[in-house]
Length: 158
Image (cartoon, rainbow, N blue to C red):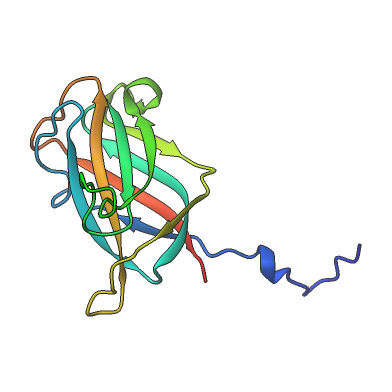
């Protein structure tokens, strides 16, 4: 095979971008065990992305489940309206790390390949929205005021 300098395999090139929640705005309230808090995060350049990884920083170590929804209707008892796409378990309690045994907890989940599509129209600025839900699945409730920040690494799709 010829690997001449200057030749780029375009179909293998991928632009990785990040969209983040804001610890001062998103997921700030108390979340009871098996309860969920929804957030809609605008900023996607296209309505179709591939999620490649998720990083979470949390002040409380819990098993969090990050839910992905295709529209702002989120969960609904009417299955025709419910917009479930996928979910990612983020087990901060078991696999999270702390620096010097104190402070916030860190966890990364990489090597993901989740096809996500926003079915809502773009914002006035022309961006699409990532519709999230954060659930506490084990380890007790999340306390109000305890910060969480989530970074989602993605690549746009055509």
